[in-house]
Image (cartoon, rainbow, N blue to C red; front, side, top):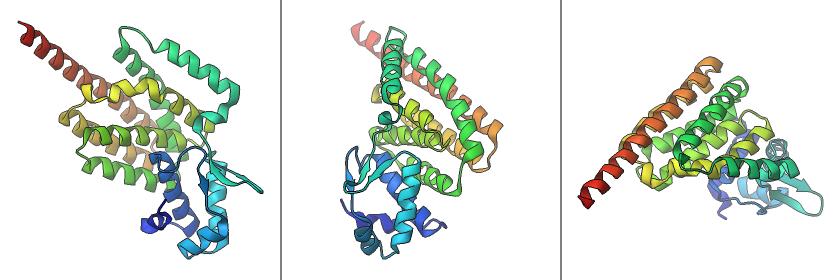
Amino acid sequence: MDWSSLTRSSAPLSVPDRLAVDLERLILEGELKEGDRLPAEKELSELFGVSRVSIRQALHELESRGLIARKPGRGTTVLPLASRGGQAGMTLNALLTASANGATELARIMELRAIIEPPIAALAAERLTSRDAEQLRTLVEEMEREVDLERYADLDRQFHQAISQYTHNPLLAQLTDLISKEIAPSRRRAVQSAERRNASSADHRRIFEALAEHDVARAEAEARAHVDSVLREALKVVSSNWTHKVEERA
C-alpha cells in the first residue's frame, strides 16, 4: 500500500478532514479492503508529516461513520459495510436476494432503485458536509473523464454508495451495500453504451450539484429522473441487442 499517495488531495479542507476524505476514498474504491490494518498513528503521522492529533481526528471521523474499528492492542482495521447490521443485515440480504430473481430482472432492479435512491439522495442533501461534497465532486469529475465501461460501472457504484454514506445513517449505507449485487446487472457491459455513460454522467453532475446546494427536493427529483433515464437507456441497448440477434438468425 503506497500511503504517500494520500497526500494528493488539494481540497480546501482541514488536515484531519483531508486525510479522512482520502482514506474513505481508498475504502470506497476497494484499495483498502475488509480486515486490512492501517499503520499506527505514529507511523501515519510520520508518513504524512502531520501531527498525531490530526491523524487521531481523521480516524475518529472514519470510526464514527462505521468504516473502521479501533481497538487497543489490535490496531485499526477496515470494517465491511454488511457487518454493521448484524443478524438483521443477514436477514435483509437473504430477503432482497430472493425478491430480485425472476424473468423481469431489469425492471425489478430499476423499481428497487426508484424506491430507494431518491429518498436517500434527499436525506444526503440535508446532511452533506463540505468534506462529503469534495469526495462526490472527485467521483463525478473522474466519471466524466472515464471511457472504459467496466471502470465506469465501478465508479457508478461508488457514487451511489457514497451518497448513502453521506446520509450519516449507517443502516442506509448498509442497505445500499447489501443490494449492490442485486443492482449490478443494471450496470453490466451488456446494457452499457457510450450514450448511456454520457447521459449518466450528466445525471450524476446534476445530482451532485443539488446535494452540494443542500436542495433536498431537487436532489430527490434528480435522483428519480436518473433512475428513469438509466432504465430507458438500458432498455434501448437490450432492445438493440435482441434485434441484432434476430437479424443474425434470419
